[in-house]
Image (cartoon, rainbow, N blue to C red; front, side, top):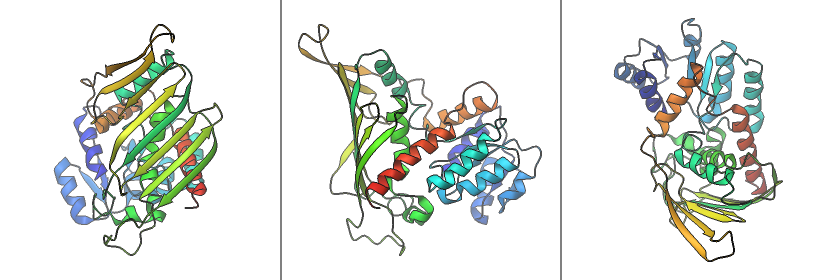
Length: 338
């Protein structure tokens, strides 16, 4: 599914041409090749790596396959765009990061900047923080709780691998957590995690998942402390007995903001402060982020990565940051005994 979005980017940009498609399903392989006029196809991705005219590879497979494929891509001397999450475990992800660091000539990026750092809201809010409008940020509160929106059940039902932790890595904390942490911690310069208390649960209804393997959480929450004094309450659910839209509140000693960070949500940022340099009355102002120049999240990622390949822009999402955020999620699971 995500490959279709990437293909639109790389076939739609005059700077790139798609030469290969690797797909194990013969029907999907042929249809996709026809839809995007891809000249070479294979059921074995190693075949494409032997092509000397191939420059870069995008890995769009389930998370458990990311590292072995990525290692082969790097060994073949190809640039790499790796879908999120980077891997199902920190240990395996570290192998990929180490291999990438050994080949600085290759342009390698992750994808968790897609809804986060490439989002105009990220730049806008980071500007407020960097300008001192919030003072010292001491607390982040983020909640996104939905009902019956589980991958492999209600969302993309054929993809039953979403429900198998050995393949998917985890549930909503894993799937969306890489975006949440990329956005929120990126605003504050990637502070170091100090402590975490957490909880995970599933089995919150009796819907048949269509598979005997259902080992990912449906609802998870964590309270984290960081070495810079930041406290962060983080909650994600794709199935719980509540309906709480994606919302973030950031509290600082001089001001605060409340917003929904996804680009499809409102562009408005509620800004709270006290006038007269803190000596007056409590005030609230609605700040609107200009989203008119944003082409869309997947489109922005494609453009950013092609810019990087062409030496026209920075790496969209360094693998070191992907690994850092994956490490935090793994500590959350460990704290939840999950």
